[in-house]
Length: 380
Ligand SMILES: *[C@@H]1O[C@H](CO)[C@@H](O)[C@H](O)[C@H]1NC(C)=O
Image (tube, rainbow, N blue to C red; front, side):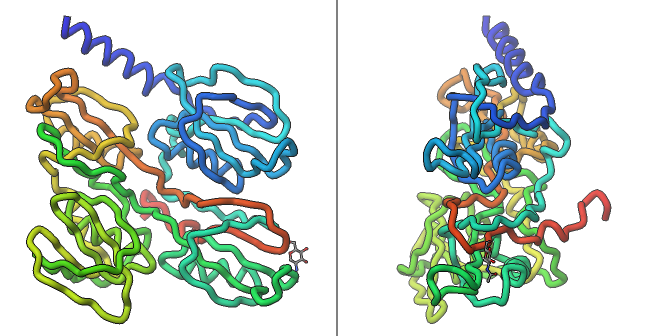
């Protein structure tokens, strides 16, 4: 009976993950109503399709375009899924475009897409970390491309309604390194990372000299609390964040506290706390990606699971799958035997996520061109 169940499970799993065909066609003025799993803002349907491709369980989407007239829901990107992998219904609807995740396509596995489009009279509000005044939006985009933390920008041009912020260039940040949204202590599971997880897009000559302060707390100054399995992972997060000046990792809760105070750093001795400094303009030592964490669950963010014999095999499966960023393997010490031997491969969205997208006259918004300058790895 158990064997049958496992076989059945395997069969349904295979039909789910392998029967999906690569379908790149966009369906203009077609709605895939209902079955939403998430909602995000997107400036255009290509970005929405990237979000769906990178979302662990999105299989298709509907995007509400700028020319939608029924209500104010412009630039809405609805991520969707069904057990069959197909929309239950398709209905004609003017102002929306629908399409499929590119996970089954070879280009669905491009990790660092180049987003070269600029959007006139479109604002990307929020996520600002630095401002300056530039002659035109091209210069604002050049600054964004050169600034390591900048993922997108909004520029107010010389005709903008508020005179005092004409020519103001807003540089904005979004996480583009894989983060583990939930890290929990759970007996009988082992978690770790793809050895190919991309932590930086730039290549530097200098090797980072990592600075960690063991059994040390730095009080206050929290900007952001993330989750991490180790002080080294917390350091990678701090290094990627534009305003993180130092961090404290708390082992008992896996909280990674990113702190901001460029003026001073007050340290105190505290067991179980590890503090440290971010790295700058150097090649990080990514050996922490190779550490498997026993008794730790990276809960959620599942793409799928497969059955296998040990955590090492699960780790290799994740590394070999271009869509996998991290994994959790369930051993025979786990409380519920129905989950034994499951290898969950996981990922999060790493294409820039926009807190909001709205229409606004006389502004120009767009993305960094960093990734457009990269030479694909296979050509090196
Ligand atoms: C500002 O942008 C608007 C629309 O994008 C354009 O019509 C206008 O000419 C621009 N103004 C300046 C001074 O560039």
